[in-house]
Each structure stands twice: as C-alpha cells, then as structure tokens.
Length: 139
Image (cartoon, rainbow, N blue to C red):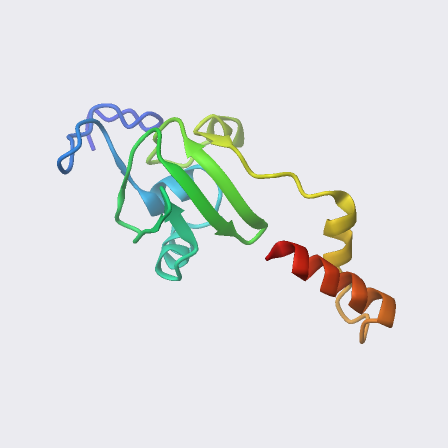
C-alpha cells in the first residue's frame, strides 16, 4: 500500500469498529519471525494453535497493539504481547521489537528430559520415567 510504514503499519485505514491500524494475524506472526513462512502461520491459525486474548483466531483477524497472543510454534509454545505492527518481514533485531515475550522459562532439566536423539531406539526404563514425569508437569 502506498504511504504505509512497513514496520508500524501507520497510514492504514481502520478496519472494523475499533479505531487504529491493524494487521492480519498470519502476516504479523510471519513478520515477527514466530513462523518461517506466512503459509505456516496461516495453517497454525486454522489448526487452532493461535489464540488472541484467549480466543482461537483465523488468519485474517485484525491484530492491534496491546493484544495478547498464545502461539504454539515449532520451537514450543510462546506467549507474547503485541507492541508494534508490521506487514513486512525485516531483520530479526526489528522483529524482536514488535512484541514483549512473556513465555515462561523452562528449566534445563525438563528440556533435556523431553529430548531424545532420533534413532536412539526404545527409551530405557529411567528415560521413560523422566518422560512420564515431564508430561505430567505439562498438564
């Protein structure tokens, strides 16, 4: 769009009853580098992996600053608050300024308990117990 600031989204016309600029959720997730491609972000929305203010959203939902997102990414679940809007993907340093990351930190022991080398075969009794304990804590 002509006259639109790609980072802040300034210059966009309001869409809907709320005033202010907005960006599609899938486009923002891609610009914020939570997903590698926009199509992956859209598929995550369809699968119900993206919640905005506690509600599952479709890819075309308008996103505004101040919205709270809970997103299941390939790297694990993320909880973020939207600070700025962006329609285009930029450098990672700029993408990091678009949101405030509220994701709880998982202790290293729990991360290691859930990770096994591929092709390592069947888990040992000890590894299985660690996995069971880890999965119970996730509920």
